[in-house]
Image (cartoon, rainbow, N blue to C red; front, side, top):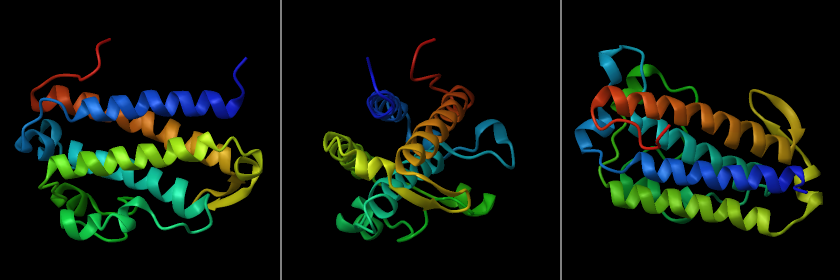
Length: 178
């Protein structure tokens, strides 16, 4: 029988595959298009950026006691020309819509490194890490396993649904069949 950590990790691996597929077949224009022309909608580029950066921050910086993020270690802000600290939370709609991923392959490499970092955390099978209470702003304190489950998995799945709708509205259609 699966324990909670095994379940969350397995579902995160599934979500990571979905995020990887979400980039497939998109043109740069579609990646950065505002879905349906809605003034407050997020682009696919922004949503992928937000999800990968959030997971990177939660897994590395928060849970692993301020371990440098993959973002920082890999020099991705400079290499991609994107904000060094921002993860999308708190950005205005205008800032989010203006975000551009100019090198899709490099960004894909970043996402893969984040997914590998998450796998590395779970491979430790260390309950003391997962039981440790961490602070997730603005949500408050919670066990690390809950932070990964709530922020990375549940929040990530909600954003994946947003990406699937956006893909439908900008042209290529959903990346995962129903």
